[in-house]
Image 1 (tube, rainbow, N blue to C red):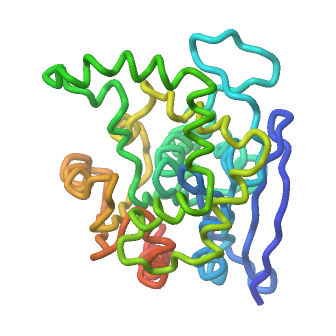
Image 2 (image 1 turned 45 degrees about the vertical axis):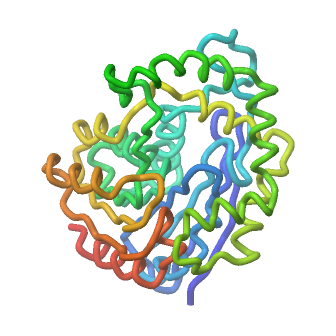
Length: 304
């Protein structure tokens, strides 16, 4: 019988929320960790964790700043570091995931990440090295606003970019932007773009995204993330990750280009597969869970 436990792990004096679904009466030696995307939480795997937990020890975690994990105040590179302030970045989230795996799972693991959770998974895979058996990326963030993605030929963007950076550094601006987004009407509008088929956009999903946004420091990770103009790209990490990588992509993702994912598959030998879900958007695990779960289970069961 499948069992679910919800837990808190103390990491560097901060609370990290995580859960485990498995069958205690049928022990498995396969460990899977689910890593959510931006603005989401471990609950976003609502249609996946129980299914995967029938065959594995399926963990899910809230990244620092999201869900029910601690939300420390953000600081940026140009600001003076103060006690308990955090620089939200992929080194932070990658270290969090790797330390969790070493502390709680204590066995080789398969990492599964959606959106920015894909970048965090890749960074953790680099740190874990041989203890990461496989990394599965669902519509991995391509980080098109990173400095490294801006062409010298894009004159307008190079002109506007310093202005944009100056604006989003201002806390009152980032807080205002966050407050405008952190309401159920706006969340539903964003979901209608992210889930082009309209499937599974329901009150439960809206609450999963809305409720964490109402916590006291919920705007802090948002401020940190929108100021990440020079951090890892997926292609940086493909070069240093030692395990096999598999891609699952929504054909109609409005933000992460399918063509770029195809280029990744063609150009990196450690990317072993690319499964495309027709008519599906940025979150295939939630918009099309039955099809996604079939792919995930096959990839998991094929792990050597």
